[in-house]
Image 1 (spheres, rainbow, N blue to C red):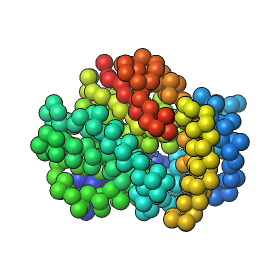
Image 2 (cartoon, protein in one colour):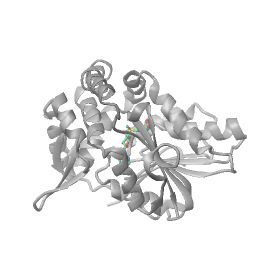
Image 3 (spheres, rainbow, N blue to C red):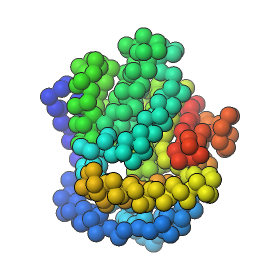
Image 4 (tube, protein in one colour):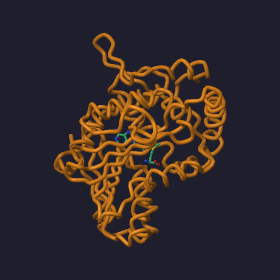
Amino acid sequence: MQRTLRLAHPRLVLSNCRPHCPSSLVAARRNHQSAPQSTQTQASASASSSTFNDNRDSQRTTHFGFQTVPEEAKESLVRNVFDSVASSYDLMNDAMSLGVHRLWKDEFVSRLKPGSRGPLRCIDVAGGTGDIALRILDFAREKYADRETSVDVVDINGEMLKEGYKRFKKTMYHNTPQIAFKEANAQAMPESEFPSNTYDVYTIAFGIRNCTSVPDVLREAYRVLKPGGTFACLEFSHVNNPLFRTVYDQYSFSVIPLLGTILAGDRASYQYLVESIRKFPPQPDFAKMIQDAGFSTGALHEGKGGAWIDLWDGIASIHTGVKL
Ligand SMILES: C[S@@+](CC[C@H](N)C(=O)[O-])C[C@H]1O[C@@H](n2cnc3c(N)ncnc32)[C@H](O)[C@@H]1O
């Protein structure tokens, strides 16, 4: 069933395609709360995994952090995480990364050079509180005096979008055609609202690893982009240097859940965030998935002429592709 809500602002359109199933949601939440605390040993073991969906026996399963869950449960579990963290999300991002996520997002957007070749129609999927959208609009305006580039922020979670909407209310973009917030699943965006061959740029930052099926997200990205349009993904990735990886694992598994407890009163959600990073495919495997979705990318290596660039030795990486 598709639900479409129009909130106070005409550009905030919430269309929700998930079936309503209160009992499975309750079960999923219970499952999430009772998730076992993971250890670093698990982190190392999981980091070598290059698959993202396990299909065993007749029941299709996937990862929710280090847990294996039925595919149909993951969406609710992820939704619970972001419902829980929405109000503290921006503060926690700064605290967990010591502000470094801002530098990565700046780098991500500046590489796209929005506005340099005229106004763009952009879609920022899993856009949450609008961090990338705001940077795209600011970059286009400040560097190229472009006030026509627009961004549709799409997210499965209404609570995250509400935080983004509140934030944009304080900006000059509020109440303009430059910004819209839409609730939808990245894996199946309704064709009526997101027609094929529509956007010049598709961005997704720290979102794709939370989705149940990465290939489905990539297929949708390909569909909504215009031919010649750019796909760009910023995501946590795999650290190359073993020594640095050890230090990073120590920090992630001890400090981040602790910060979650202190600042957001929610250890489990931040434990999930750390675990989900380890379960995401390594850079070359993800680049291959982007190619398999039909995108033209650089060669399957990092750096100049390659399909991705690493940030901070691979803590995060930027993958790009062009729709042919
Ligand atoms: C870590 S946040 C990233 C938010 C923002 N892009 C940023 O960089 O700050 C991940 C976002 O992905 C969204 N998300 C998870 N699964 C999704 C799905 N299947 N479709 C759309 N959004 C999804 C969550 O609701 C959440 O807002």
